Length: 357
Ligand code: ADP
Ligand code: MG
Image (cartoon, rainbow, N blue to C red; front, top):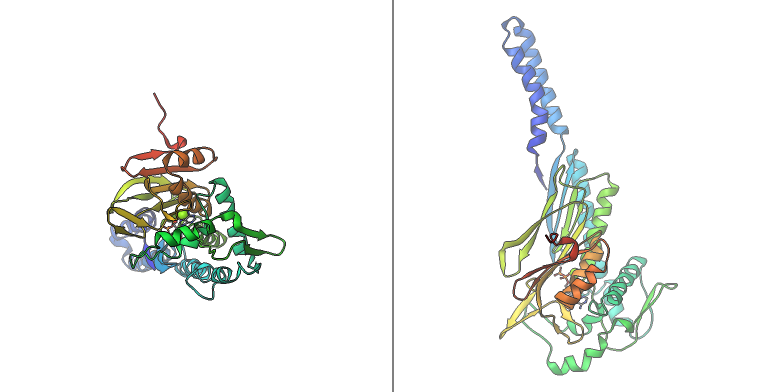
């Protein structure tokens, strides 16, 4: 865990006692008293310094990405407990929702839901319900059953399914073939060969849970991020947080730096997991209608009230492309978008556009 003491706070704490100390030292008539007072003042100084609030931060590799927590706290022990609670929560969600962990609830769904209804935890049921809402909203651009084909891509190994396999499995991608039963908290697939994956929404959910945990512990200024999903609690104490949108083609450059407070921002990019096949970039965001990587844009950032929503919408708008994507975002209150298209041109939703003269 790192501590970053604010300059402002240092000034506020040290100026008063130091002034007092210097005044006393200038008067030779109070020699013994000086020494006592100096010692006493120093003690006070050390004490107040220990009690002063500061920024604490930590980063850890969880859910196949980098999780970062940054918060403002007075007490180092409390800060440490708060950061640990977020990291533990992220790991818990990973164990629950990773398709790669054989004991996860998600793996159980994928192996059993085509045979009959599978009862799942309320948390997973709620998140899948939210994913289905975004699927409806985006007319199937966001579809967790993309995994019916998506599971056969291996970006690290540079592998993609043959066209014949895609043709055979394409009709398994259809969120309407996922049946949720609220009363029994269960899920069922209508077709054999279907699979789901929450990679487009689970990190947002984890970030929201992290922020809720920090707020419950009395923290009012914090940042929690997992890969491209960031949520901000409060501001950066008197000024906004500055969140960068990466340049999709230069890893070390930023396309834009946005001042934000008390909101969530998620970015989906074609540079996160990909390989190059001839002149094609094969990446991790799948167009449900083709089973291939979605083309047309390089990155989509969504700003909104919570990370679960912004995470799912960034993936949805990536699939929809500039025009349909902006139409969707402009129809939603309190949600904004910044899109970088295939020619690196930036597009903004209506509320982010500068007013016309
Ligand atoms: P990341 O932060 O992992 O880059 P994104 O929010 O950009 O995630 O979403 C990409 C992930 O979403 C993919 O890795 C995959 O797990 C999932 N995904 C890919 N295509 C779709 C889709 N059409 N609908 C829903 N989820 C998708
Ligand atoms: Mg997403």
